[in-house]
Length: 105
Image (cartoon, rainbow, N blue to C red):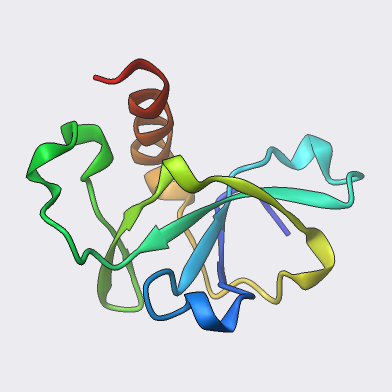
C-alpha cells in the first residue's frame, strides 16, 4: 500500500455514495496497523455552498468524485484490498481539501 492509493470502499453498504477511499497516510507510517483514509463521494448535494478547494473532483475509472475530507478516518490496513488506482498526480488537490477543512477557505 502507498500514500494516495485508491481502494474500493471496504464497507459494502457505503459504496453507493462512497465507492472509494484514498490512503492519505504517509508511507513512513506503514508499520502501523491502520491507515488514514479519505472517502471519495458521489455528489448528491449542491457543492456551490462549499469552499472551492472542497469541490474539486477526482476522476476514478471514468467517473468524477469529490474528496470527503470531513470524513477522514483510520481503517485497519488489513481490510484495504488491492489498489484500483492512484491519486498521486492529484495530491495537491487532496492537500487543498484537507487545508480547506482546517482553515475554512
